[in-house]
Length: 151
Length: 147
Image 1 (spheres, chains in turn green, purple):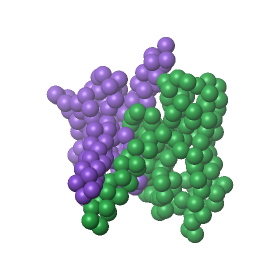
Image 2 (cartoon, chains in turn purple, green):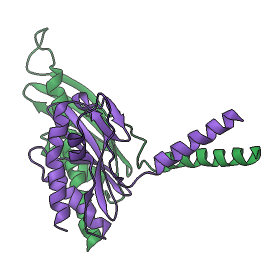
Image 3 (cartoon, chains in turn orange, brown):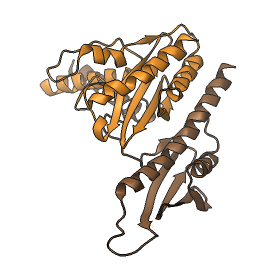
Image 4 (cartoon, rainbow over the protein chains, first blue to last red):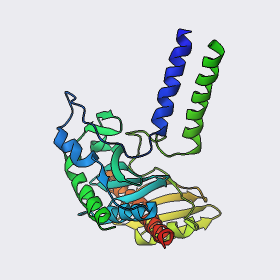
């Protein structure tokens, strides 16, 4: 019986995890080894938009990826309600899942190569990796705000 | 009670598994599971001509098409004393890479060691040019979907 309950809880947990496709409000967890709340919020906070057309939002995200300062973010893959974007720089790479719905857009950590591998990943938010990760993402966030603000 | 629990738990487990398999949406690629330049591209429906995408990328990246056939293109880079060979496989769902060889062609002997950092950079560059073409197609598709 206990085993069955354990199985049930694991199944419920995995189902809810797989179903969480849409942007969700970022809640900072005060972890001992994590970076500051300010740095985390600067990347992972919801970016609201006023469009009811998902294709407009999709195009705004793709444009933002191309318009960042320096090396552009490139499309890795797309799916329902998200764009997987990759940024390569000096032998390191960041891969983000940019999720969107009818209200907001949100960046989530999907992976990293070399320096940008996440050492502390909680709920798709990276609390610890190379310090430049939190700096280089600002340009993407800025462009997302800009392109989403103009639709 | 026991029977109901078994039914519910098996249903949820199967649903979760099915989601993961049918749709690469979210969790199939976890954090930290990417390689530097060899990850395949999963193609969306709007990528109608993957061969053209690859050929354009090869040209823009400064590589050359050495040979092409059904579902593959062999590409070569002869650059700064290095000769790189890669095979790019494709179908309507995926573009994948096999990096065949990298050697120096400007000298011989033990002093002519291949510097991996150069090879890595050029291979990554080829992959990024394919990603650039895919990004352009995604934008075109988004514009067409809006209009």
